[in-house]
Image (cartoon, rainbow, N blue to C red; front, side, top):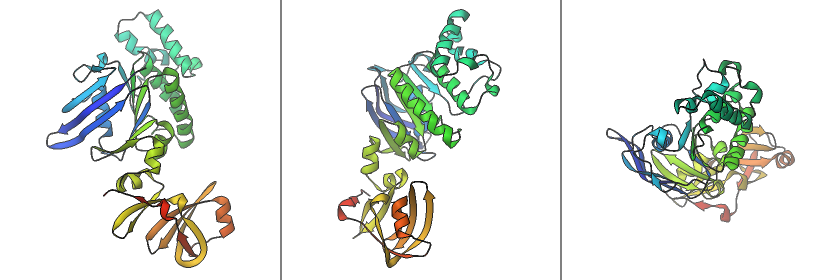
Length: 319
């Protein structure tokens, strides 16, 4: 079981700070997601852990060993890139075995080990195909097998699901989570998708402008966002000003009754739930109703309604 610790990790590009003072402790094998908008520093942080980016300040500790100044190939880490970076002229088996070839492992042995990895990602019948003969999901599995062939203590994933269609993305994230549990190693996964981070991670770091705004379990971050940025970025929350202070009210905690001074300005059907926009004295509110609740109310655009919530559902936010 691998552990990872980041101690006051910083990255500067000239006078610009890309990552500022990140601290993280993953004591056992966990699935950790770095979540944030483009340009927030999450990929720079991942690349510093991998050794592909020089650390400006701080340390990376893997299994109680400081690997901050160790070359990437000697860190017991492996990285899966966003574009998969498969060699188009090599068959699947040789793509997967490539790192072993660089290490001087003989062809028969490396092919045997590569086939074990290929079977583990359910591509046994694809071993002799080339990357352009595979679907996007199959290419991703090849990239994953290649990243795992060296049996790393830590797997780093840079937006690995972003190129997949929505249905395949859901299927592959389930496979990633199952694989992480099976291998019992730490995965650190960069994403800008809130849904992806919530579904995959044991621990999520919400980043903004190079800083970690909040870290915790998906449940904690969603139910108790610490400030306005986290509440708005993580989604599912309304940020409202009450008596000069910012509070968060979850979309599913707001009640709607027909009639009143508020007005329905948008209706989105999302299968089992319906999302409404309601213009109220508190500003524009987003409200999520079950399909049965919505059907009972029989609402249409422009209908007058009253939006309300319990005071206990108001979560105070830091500035």
